[in-house]
Length: 69
Image 1 (cartoon, rainbow, N blue to C red):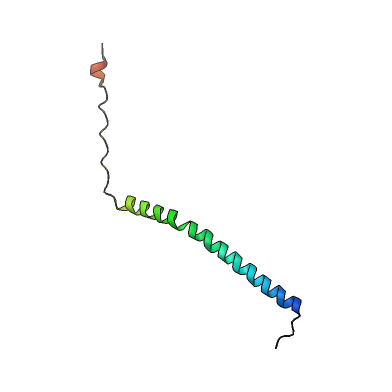
Image 2: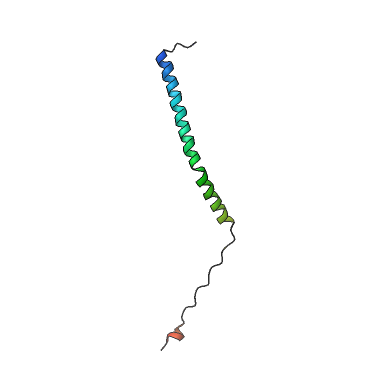
């Protein structure tokens, strides 16, 4: 049997409620990042597995023969 005063028991109960509320809030915040994190994960996976894109050839540079006047 505990020798806690009514104040200590009430204080303990309130602190437990506060802790639970804080944990619930953190959990809710974490859930808000799940969808954006999934989108970024899918994007990076797609980029990593995408075939290499061919680059456009560089346009021909004018030669010194064509510029002599």
